[in-house]
Image (cartoon, rainbow, N blue to C red):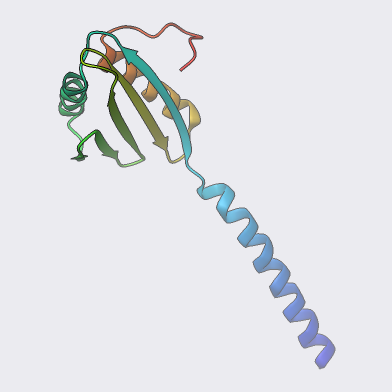
Length: 126
């Protein structure tokens, strides 16, 4: 009887261990990030552009002093605007998707293009 109980516990422990190892890999979100220098765009204008972008998307959002966060059913994004002098700024975008790195990267590129007002060329380092 002790041998049977020992095997049962060993098998249960092994099964739980394998399940615990596989869960984090399945639950890991896909993240993309990038930045764009905005010449002749102040930090305030950068934030205004971010607000306009989020308004067009019509998604739930939160606004901080230098950042904007938007929420989708399957992901989230954050836009940060840093001042780079009186007339320039840097926009940083983080895009997270629950399942797809490609979706996160495509949204990242879309957001940078919309906020910067220019197309990001394929292959350009973000």
